Image (cartoon, rainbow, N blue to C red; front, side, top):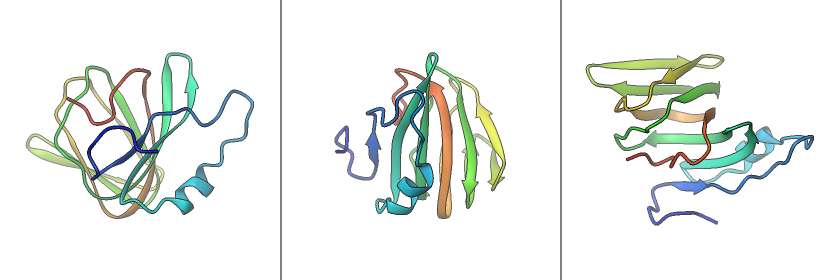
Length: 124
């Protein structure tokens, strides 16, 4: 169930897990076949936690709210104007609202993302 019309990305905004349910992020990551898979796992207060299984590059975009990336496995590169952040397993970063960025994953990479509810993952 892909939401949106851009076939480059498999973005699923439905919330899979309710409070007190065990979240099977590892199983979801292992089963992901699309090169840019994004699934909303759960809601926490006014935010959502999303699982990303990524390979390749995303498009340049920004959000009207901050976004947090945490690498579970692999390597995530986040291009910014004039520089690139390199995140390895166990590392994370907050991308402030309105900052243009482009995530890239040279190999299959698993990340958790935290952002406010209502944010459109594809950006503006």
